[in-house]
Length: 168
Length: 293
Image 1 (spheres, chains in turn purple, orange):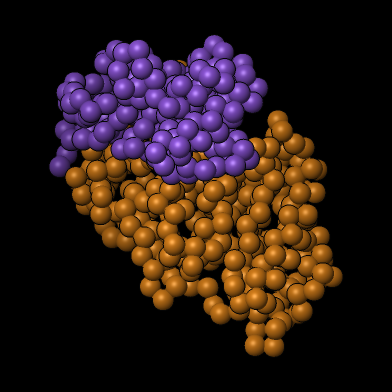
Image 2 (cartoon, rainbow over the protein chains, first blue to last red; image 1 turned 120 degrees about the vertical axis):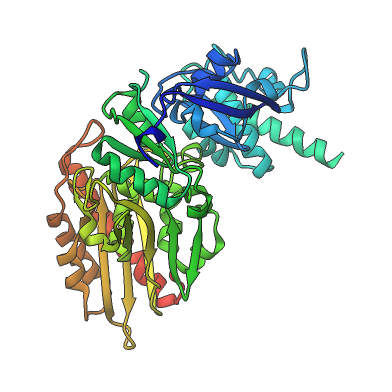
């Protein structure tokens, strides 16, 4: 127990989208940058870098979190999911993604991965939200193109389709 | 921007974390959820030379209720407290404030003890600790001590914690019978910092008069602001509209808002009065119903 316990580099092992990775990183590396630069998972977008815009939202042990407000080393031994995990495979879309396509829920698409990772977890917990509840659930994600209406439409459609799928 | 370089230690135990802090002093910061510290580091407003990561300390992730008194550990995240039925039952003021603190993505990572150690007067939680009469349990390598919330918040982002100390847990005392509490705020959007917010806690005596009262406001000065004189006006009296209006007017005199990009200081002072009136009215109704929330 001494100052030698403080390290300049850390050997990091974690699971991303079900796959195990080990890398040596500087402790100051943000999880968002780790995903993009070390693993090449560029679906996670970096916007404001201070936790306001939500573009970098990933799921940390299944719960939405800002990857710009998390050091990669904090994910030691944990499981991260990114937007790349949502679709079942190449050319496929998840129910939520399909609803965004259907409702024109994106224009430039920069905010979309963060919104998908937020709302995928939200709908798993709240299968039948009202429009007002969807708007509140979206309040941690900024979109500068759509005015949100088509995003709200897409989330409500996804909720409906997910309920229908669960009932079938 | 990106954080400046720092050296990192993952704490292996509370004792390990405290020993590292004793050695490194002010050059090191504790890292819990990081939801205030990391943005400050991204802006390079904060450039700690070392971070001591508390995230591995699962034994500091707890909520215990003992005869209505609540204890919450240093690694306990907002979301866990927000969704805890025991908290809602025994400490409704805390349950009521939590959905107002930032967004779910932030609450999934941030911790209550981290928030309080940061001592941002714009944050809701410090005001709730004042109104609830909470105590802070500080540990260092040399021992531990309890600090009353009223003595904990010294100034803007400044607490009573010494450089070798860590806020290891908080304790909220049990609400007496015939109590009612309320938290209310005005913010531009859900999850934003409040332009003003009020936490109130009232207890009726056996005759239905006000036996005790506490009122605290957020974003109303350099620390969470206790409206002590306003609360004193209520003691011993009937909690009617007239008494509540007088206390609300007094609370307006006790705040020191600075104004910000979203609102002027005059508007914050106006809100302090309106929200104090609403919070007291609601808390009094809850106390009479015997349901604290």
